[in-house]
Length: 310
Image 1 (spheres, rainbow, N blue to C red):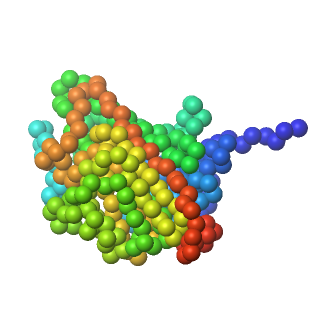
Image 2: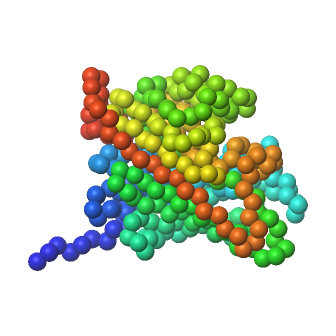
Image 3: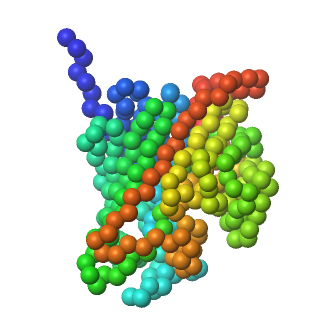
């Protein structure tokens, strides 16, 4: 008699309530806490955890999350005084928006390849952002890869006005030492978010171990190489979801490699700002790939890398 097949999406109680989706072929997994901002807290590929999560901080709901892959909507970055001026009035909208703070719904995808989470407008969003919307995030596991599809709908009717927004993801990639990491594929010039001034990308990347926050309009794939762990994570983007932010916060063993649609304050400047009329929708796509690197002197084993991240 064959063993009873377990459901791909299962609820777990420890170390906190969360869901795990397991690919039946590869055994790769996604860990999710939809109640905490539709948060992807973990992605295991080839037996290794790809994402960093500060578990102690996550266990305290009063603290902001440091880890996983927070969702940034309806803006990336912040606005002066957290004030969003619109034709209907001025609204208070905090940094990175509200999507990462509100509970989402979760379901397995009908195609059996992953999960979908959704967030819709409601009493918690309308005082900050006066638009009826639906935000859907689909996560599909591929061989050594995670494909992400985002669908944003303006569910209003004529008279609700044009809905402006930007969108981003904030994945924390686990590394052994940010100072040893290389990032390949970014353009030569970037914006230093710490000073909001143009900067040379190479000079910024030379300070990953000291702490950086930079924005680039990327071209092609961006590759994060962790030579100590013999691992690379590649971000592949599609326009208009093709800007990239790199952020480090030493001594945390992570490098954030983030796809954005627009720079900070796009809702004021209009730079790369996305807009939807009532009844319209937009689909955004990106993908992360994991590459194993040839090992050599100084390489840390997968088990040691796992212990360093946990």
